[in-house]
Length: 283
Image 1 (tube, rainbow, N blue to C red):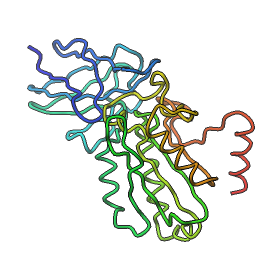
Image 2 (image 1 turned 135 degrees about the vertical axis):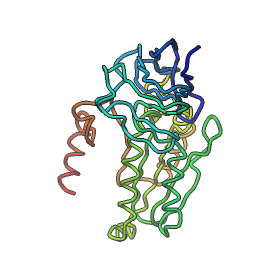
Image 3 (image 1 turned 180 degrees about the vertical axis):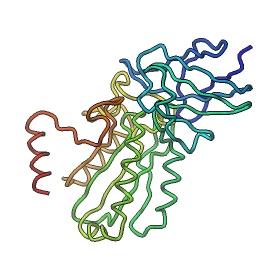
Image 4 (image 1 turned 180 degrees about the horizontal axis):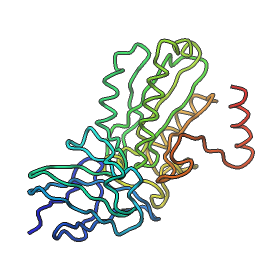
């Protein structure tokens, strides 16, 4: 009988167990309704014995150079480290007896992480919380307003159009903290900032890839007849606001390597590229 029990029955969980025999566990990520290969996974492992286990993935290179993220409680996470990496599809972990560990492709960000962050700013005089709409699975999609809703200018910030892109949420957190510093308070004389931190909230909580979701994902839903409640509500809000000064959508484009290891602004073809460069130069 195997000494390791594998589970993904928690917020953000995603794994398919292929084989659980001896000291080697065979796994792969669940693509679910994602129509192309993608890389997100997250699972819990309960070990009854003190032993070293190798986890082997059978669907692509899904172990990054810092190893997987690891947590004892599913709330606080750290990188396991490069020493744990055997290959881009294999890592090892030494369990203590009766130890529970959570492992994830990257450091996750679930609704409970957002609620912990929101608890640090909910008494701020410039912050107001609303509900954008209900998701397809009837989860309230949070919306934050920073500043005066009657301000003359509006900015729109969104994240998690692709459910698995968790680290973008931490970048958004950092930006919001900076915006709410006293040194930024004059900004709100002229601006109201609208923030949708969890666009695909169902995908985030269910542990979906979210990228290239069939028939199309949330990021491709800004069309005449949207199929998702979140994007439909965002379209209606922005239309009601009239022209917004700027909109920023936070993403994590790919696994690792090159520009994916640092923050960058996506600049597509003309004229969008030229307009972005012009705005950056002019400040």
